[in-house]
Length: 276
Image 1: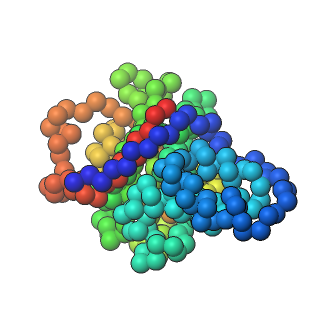
Image 2: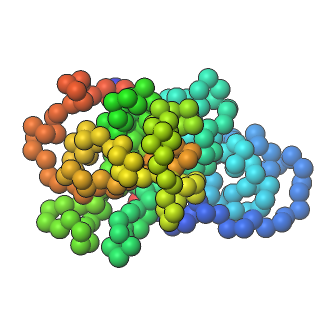
Image 3: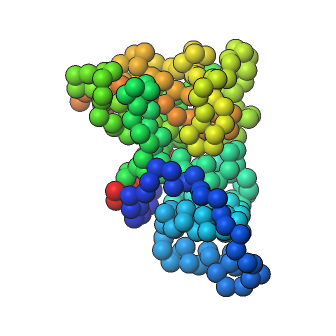
């Protein structure tokens, strides 16, 4: 059974989560709209609209602090309660690597990708699906004890590069407790170097190239429907994953292949639907 949440996500500029510098407005204490409980009720009534949270967080330093402390977490919990619980552990109000704001952005924002000359811009995704079953395809065999949620690829029109019927696929994901993960242990053990010019589009942290570290399993290409060697995957120090691939048309037989012969468990997935 697929647990899904339908949302209205109007078109939002790609820099909406890069807040403008909040102004210094006079404080009225914890009364009225500045009260966290009042704000929570307001956002519950509008189904946790992400554009409105972005706007509120840009109003003042106090609102920005409330968004960081409360609103981004509640947005994630409202949109994908199971995914948020799995990532935060037993304490739903606890912290997660990279922060709740970064997770909210990852859930709704496609970071784009490609070479600098043909780069596809980032944008708010009109539809996203995250699955921990899909995440297993991206883990080497000795790291499959890790928990990783990965989105279906967002298709971008190919500009140069692949050519033919290919499209650029952009995907993203997130690890649970990446600091303790076997994937991070493998990166450290292999003395993989952090990339100099690439930063995480969600938290701004430095990233490792999984391809350079030779930690991209062939099952990832099969899962995405991409040609071998066409994947670029990066994971940041906070466990946010982003990558690109050249998508190619698959036959019906290839689309029905499952992970090591196992059937797909749709109970692991969360859909986020919106209008562009």
